[in-house]
Image (tube, rainbow, N blue to C red; front, side, top):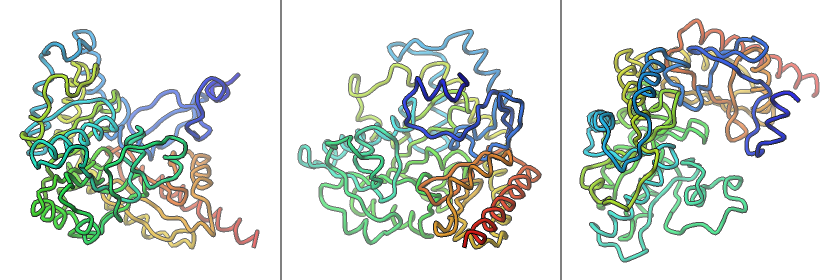
Length: 405
């Protein structure tokens, strides 16, 4: 029994991995069990933004694991405070609540928004509403999938929690029309990643900030994938020079080694939580706090946001220079690109399989988009490797389509 057969036999079939068994990695490269090397153009959905096995992060993890790892939040540690302070400094927000996964950060934001709505805005009990976007992806808990617009995420998991109102993503007039006296928050991804790297219109975030301020509604942004350098700035909302009332972080926060997330918000919002109202056995543990703080330090010391901006411009220019009838559109910002494939001509999953055969790891999203999100340490030569493979794959698929016609 090989490893693929073993996993399929004993594991739930809630993923459809590409047929490659990976065994070790370094930087932007990963190797399979047979010794073949692949270029990682996924970086675990931004979780490995620093590159695989970054030596400073591995050293920090190892040293801290030998000192103190988990004691729960029943006690203080000498590691958590510095991490929380750094998050507040970076976001210019007043307080942070650490968790583990991105979905937990979003659930924390939902609880904070509702409590703020009831205790501060004085919304009647159990009437609070949160405006969300069509095409959203915030996680997999039952509350979160309940306000997804993707049928596959919702099927057979109801009944779902009420209190969410969906509007088209990037449509400020739709947001304005959806606001009522019971609206406590707007909760959007700054850029929709799972939706296919969908970027809202220029000026949308500035208009949303103004609208939320006018109507006394919290502006909450999910930067779990888009944050921490992915788009060429520390946070994607900085492209429009706005500051949200709360932001959700995760993925790259763990340095590719641990699940670490946080909800960072205005101090008055964070102060609505009191002992017993929220928590996590592992959230904010000493090991996670140490690795996350080092991940933020490495990102600053190596200027990964700046490198992402530079390499992202190069990646997007090379992608947009590809003239293929299979490509309908290239969207992106920083080292984050979505290649919209014409479904009448090609299948995005098939293209990811073809890329695999050329030793480049990429994956489709929403059936029609080939998504590229490499580690932020990638260089031009490695981008060129990806582009060469992609051009060959597109030409190959185009030729086959023409022969079939």
